[in-house]
Length: 173
Ligand SMILES: [Mn+2]
Image 1 (cartoon, rainbow, N blue to C red):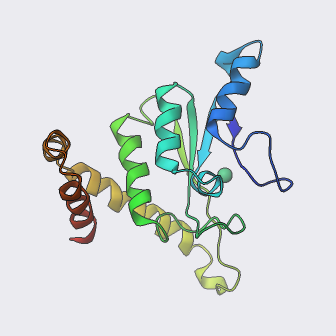
Image 2: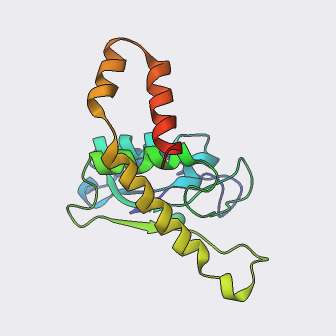
C-alpha cells in the first residue's frame, strides 16, 4: 500500500500522487497486491483536490486506505485537525467516501493529525477528538444531502444554485 506524498523524505518524490501509484502498480509482477493510501495534506501539497484523488483511486479499485487531516497552503506537511482549514474540501472527502461505501469491505480511515507544538499537555489529545467530531458532523451533513436537487441543478446547469446549496448545508445547524 503506497502512501503517496510529493515532498518527503527529500524535497521531491517519485511517487507523489495516486496516479503515480497506479502506474507503479501496473509495472509490478502482481498489480493485485498494490494499492494506494491517500492523505489529505499530501494531495494538497501536490496541488490536487484530495476528494478527486479519492474518487480517482476508488474508480480504479485501488483506494486501500485514507489518512484524513488538513493543510494550510503550500507549507510543511502540517497534519492539522481534519476540516479546520478547508471545510468544504473536508465535506467533499467524506461525501465521496460515503457515496462509494468505503469501509464496507474492511477498509479503514485513519486520522493522520498531530498536536500543535505549543499546545499545553492537557490539550495534547484534542486534535484527535476534534478531527473525529468534525468527521462525524460531516457524515451527518452528507446524510442530509439532497441528491435530487443536485441532479436538477446539473440538468439545468445552475451551478451557482448548487454551490449555494452546499454552502448553506454546511453553514446551517
Ligand atoms: Mn499519512
